[in-house]
Length: 179
Image (tube, rainbow, N blue to C red; front, side):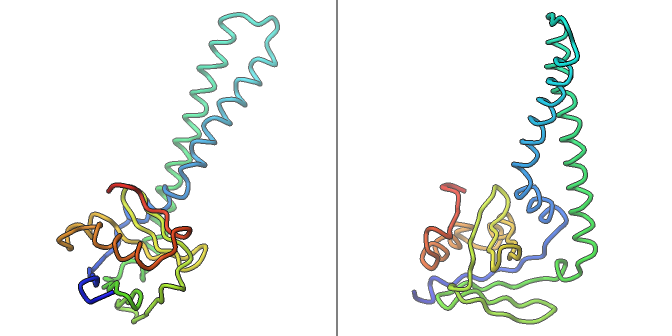
């Protein structure tokens, strides 16, 4: 790789970025919980109703959907609350961070220090609608908001993806087809 495959940009995370990260990790749980509580409510109503009639089935279906939606909304609000607390309590998340991606790896400079991550040290890389997350462990990641990258790089996120695909094995790279 030549120096033309080197990209640099600065990031300052926001509470919304942390929320997007947590929602990315909890999306399946929210969907599953909706259906579990819907089904649970419907089964309880139907099991306690003899004989079954159209009204009971309607109450079971609509009531279950309502209970499932209510619990899912409460879980979502808890994720919002928790994400905000995480951001407010972790000062290092709030620092400006300068990233440089090159053939040698990833260099990060922030108010707390400087670090370098070799490509072989990357656990996996994922992409959501709003973020690219570079995991250096199963529970530790560099969080890169795509909007911030697009505002700073002429080719946007595509320039970063080019470097990532050139240096990371496909089985550890979970990028979206189009940004």
